[in-house]
Amino acid sequence: MTIRVHAPDQLAWRRIGDIPMGWMRDHIDPTELEGHLAFHEAGDDGPQLMEMRLNARTLVAPHSHDDPEIFYVVEGSLHWGGRALEAGGSMFIPAGEPYSFRAGEQGARLLNVRSRADHSFVPVEQKAQVLDQFSRQAEGYGRLTGAMAGVDRSAAFRAQVGLAPEDEVLDVCCGTGAMALSLAPHVAHVTGLDLTPAMLEQARGAQERSGCDNVDWVEGDAFALPFADTSFSLVVCGAAFHHMLDPRPALAEMVRVCRPGGRVAVRDVTPAPEKSAAYDRMERMRDTSHVHALTPGEMAHLGTGLPLDPPMLNASVAADVPLDAVLATSFPVTCTIDEIRALFLADARNGEDALGFDARLIEGEVRVSYPQTTAIWVRRA
Ligand SMILES: C[S@@+](CC[C@H](N)C(=O)[O-])C[C@H]1O[C@@H](n2cnc3c(N)ncnc32)[C@H](O)[C@@H]1O
Image (tube, rainbow, N blue to C red):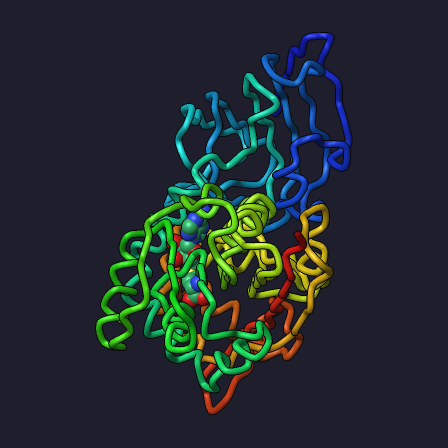
């Protein structure tokens, strides 16, 4: 098969490492993509032609484009939901339509034509992804975090942040409220903020059961906190930065609402750098709102440029849980739960921990755990 491409003169071919599209460079493992990208030099309004080669079963996370585009499959195959596109096939994607695809068993080589370069690979639907996933996960999420508790990590966390009875606390991306409610009995007041109403509904239920009356819940966005500057003495965020395309503006918001001398604490899963790509790929299969789990080194440098003292860093491992407890709150879009379970089982059997979850087979059950880092900064004046 021959595909002839008539490109205007101003189209320039570049290697993948030269791509100026930050998201794509950050979120698609360059070792999985070979070939060239081509796009209009002016960057914004010109036609764009991209050729890429995807390794077998590579998953491209859900995203959408500002403008329509066409895919031509040159070699291998692509899979969209239940549909397979073989070599010679083409597919039109309307503007603004979220979609995701996976390369087939032989990988895929494709040509992609669209009209703009700059906004192309920006997954504009990230907030919609979070809302969709956590509206579905809300009910099971509380049970999962309960199963993960194992040991009382909140006591360790309270000691690390130097919790004081007069603290006014903000828990950003509070989810079902576990962290907020564990801090509430020890401080003056806690505000929990989250994007997803269904998670906040679970948090309100947990508050009623706990009897804490010094907690408020606010629906809002971590990137535009609805609070005045310096409103809180302690601002925390747990297990949420990995759902953000770029968590630095969210950290800047946390710093803005923290008073000078107050503390800003972020805890999140942090796979080792050599496991990072495989970890992200697996998490995106399991939860389409996952973007990138920072490595411990990335977490350590997250506050660079903000008015913060160097962070105190604590590495820990979240207590191990049965894989089935995690899968019970998983709503994959591009594959099935059974496919995910099979990948974990294979990883546990060969003992290589290629996925970065320390998957282990214990009495016939796969168990996983999450390496995490807590970074605690003091806000400078
Ligand atoms: C994995 S849950 C973690 C919940 C809680 N912090 C915990 O540790 O159990 C991630 C939460 O982040 C929230 N979230 C993600 N992006 C957000 C954003 N931009 N603004 C506010 N909440 C967000 C989701 O709605 C979800 O409740």
